[in-house]
Each structure stands twice: as C-alpha cells, then as structure tokens.
Image (cartoon, rainbow, N blue to C red; front, side, top):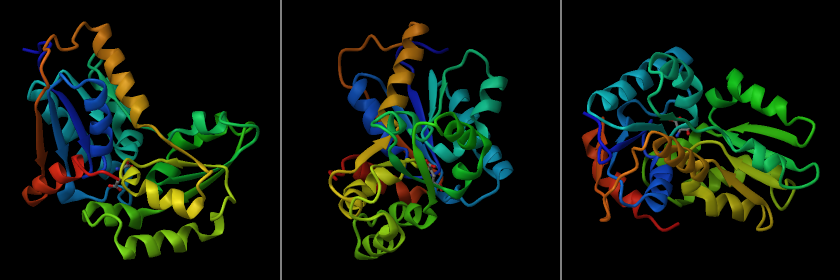
Length: 257
Ligand code: DGL
C-alpha cells in the first residue's frame, strides 16, 4: 500500500540522476528515496529509442511494483523515449520527467544565442524538436551532442584532464563568450558544470532542469496529499544494475563541485 512515507523513486541510466536527487533531497529532505541507476546498460544516449523505452519501462515499473509513491525519470534521454507511453499506461501515477531547460534559457534575455548540450537521442527526438520550435522566435539554438562526456562522468573520474581536454575541444567554437547561455540537457552534465562554465566564459548563463523537476514532483505529491508527514531526515537507498557502482553513487551524491 502506498502511504505518505513511501519512497520517491529516482531513475537514471547511471550516475546522472544523482544531480536531480540532490535537488529533490534539498527541497524535500524528510522524504525517503530509492535511487536506481542502470549503469550496466549505460550510456543510453547512443541506443535506439525502442531499446531505451524497453529499459526505462522495465526499471520504472519495477520501482512502482516496489511501492514507490512517485517516480522521477531523472534522465532527459529516457524521458524522451518513454515518459509519454508510461504516463498513458499508468494514469494518475506521478511520473516526473526531465527535459532540456529551453524555455528559461530562451527567455533569459533579448534573442540569446543558446548552446544546448545533450545526448544524440535527446536532440533527435520529436519532443526536443517541438520544444525548440516553440521558442524559435525568441532565441538562436545550437544543439550539440556530447555523448563522450556521459562516459567521463559515468566513470566517476570527475574533472580529469581527459574530460577537460575533451570539453575544450568540442566547446572550442563557442568558447570565450561566443554564446550567451548554455543548457545542460543531460542530467550527467551538471557534474561538469564548472569546467563547461570556465571554457564558455564566466558570464555565460547556465540552465539545467533539475530544480524544475524536483518542484514538479513536490507539486504532484501535494495534489495527491502524499507528501511525507515525517519531521526527521529521510533515508536514501542507492541501487544500481552494476553492483560495483553503489559506492560511487554515494560519493557522487556528496561531491562538491
Ligand atoms: N543522464 C541521461 C540524460 O539526462 C543520459 C546519459 C546516457 O546517455 O546514458 O540524458
């Protein structure tokens, strides 16, 4: 039976969703959480839509069957591939997705030049194309797939020289204030936020959708009167399809970067 103290489940292809879990925990510290990363199958962003839909559906339905009161698909890629079909299949169950923060970036100033970093799948899906089309008269968008960055972050070797060299190479055409804003359209990327900011320029505005998703989760639970009534800090249970990644998940949760 689902109660107010049932956990909120957070799912990602691997480590990226931890950036969303951090925001959820900040906003709702008394809630219990299950974090499930599917690192054994990561990265998702270079797989087919069908494959990602299958993996995401399986993971989300498993978390639901274990009594989660809401599921946050803390992955832009998995959201594009599977959120609509999962919501259709489970009407009324709170399923929160992540999408690139195109709207706040487009509205941040007069006609900004906005670099959108995401996985190849997120950028080619219709969901993203429609979102970008909605704000096409407000901003210039430059979508840039950076799948290798996912792998650097997935390895847990944050801020390595290799990661910085890779970022310097792919971001070179936009470096030193040649864009006004950047959207981190993959939940792994906030772990590289400082390096991205440094290369693009300190004045460049950085957007990511994690706090928006956390607020949406809080709203949906409030609507169903399912926010916890506990007044002590909740528990977080870290799980991963690759057992060797559990400790790394905990370290990354506490990473100060
Ligand atoms: N974290 C995922 C996202 O937000 C993608 C990572 C992957 O390719 O597995 O898009």
